[in-house]
Length: 321
Image 1 (cartoon, helix red, strand yellow):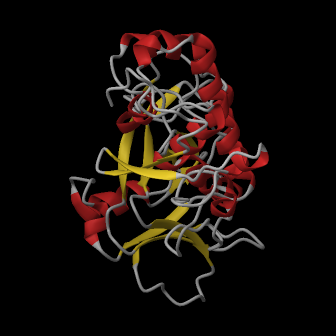
Image 2 (cartoon, rainbow, N blue to C red):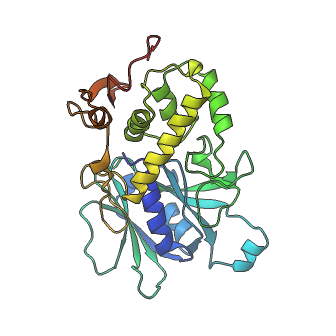
Image 3 (tube, helix red, strand yellow):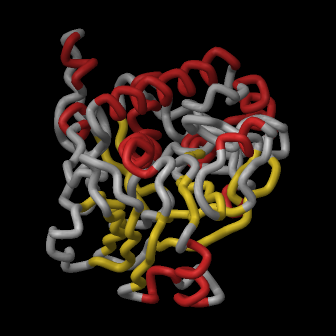
């Protein structure tokens, strides 16, 4: 499933193509991909047709496009008016948002097509393609953020957030992320460190891959109890998570197959730079540099796998998770 860097790659690509453009018409090719829009395909298309995309916003792995009914009005922004609805995009396991010229044949797994107002040199369609149909699109309400800050990362942030994303915490790349608040909540948990990192209500955007990479970089084991975690260690793993996701973002994300691509259809390359995840049985690169012999181990964790080095990430004696 795409994690924060992959979704941010999509956000950055989309905003260049769709911001300020009107949605002229909508084709729902497969209603299963708008199943979260409870009023059905006709209402979905009717809500979008004629609306203008104001921005593309991301918090954690959530992505949405605030909408304005009718043409974009600069005076509305100057008056401090904020959007009340948004188009939410959930990529799921294989969802792709692709910009295409109308002359390009439909993709095999095309689910929804948004035709956009013409702009010279820009593709005219935004297509949602999804092979496994775990993702989808739906129209949702925008509500004020609980802390009065921006809803998420955007070109023109507003203190509004898509309702379905309001329950998740800020992510490590969010300028408004508070380490102190994170650490206070972390110490109150009685769980293992990796479980905490994957808890989107505590810190959003960190998935299995980047959790393993952040723990490897900070030399911490996934079972380290959070209620005994020192402030310096908590800061180290958060800084490692931020650094590894910025590295992944620079590489275009992590792709293991053709299912994750950016809006131009290109895959990311960060999988080539992973130090722990997926490297079972291979030498630990850090230990090898110091002359130690150690190989990456894989252990079962929450119905998935966790990768770590037994030498530089030793299991804590009081680790229970």
